[in-house]
Amino acid sequence: VVRATKEGNGREVALLDYGAGNVRSLRNALKKLGCRVVDIESPAELAQAERVVFPGVGSFGAAVDTLRKKGYMEPLRDHVLEGKPFLGI
Image 1 (tube, helix red, strand yellow):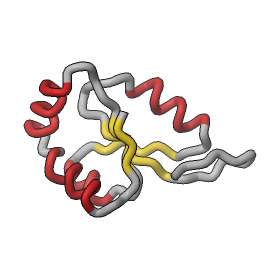
Image 2: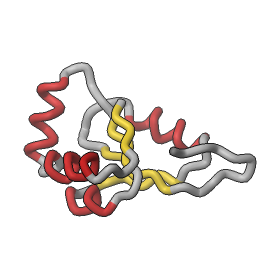
Image 3: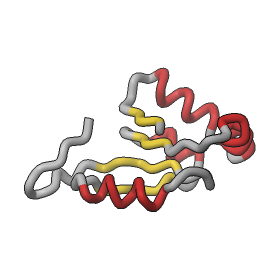
């Protein structure tokens, strides 16, 4: 859970930008909450992330295809199954 404080809590949140969703607005909202946003640029980085925000799209099938092609599907599934914080939008 990420909570904002007056000083900003400096919590690191990994943002999975796989080419879909309104990532810019989401990044700005997270920063407003005092989060330090780190872009995930590879499946290996996703596997190392503690907190992940996963922006969605209207076309779920196309999003899943893109996640598979870029190698994010298994690390994303593992992250969720490990019980790590995850926000899917």
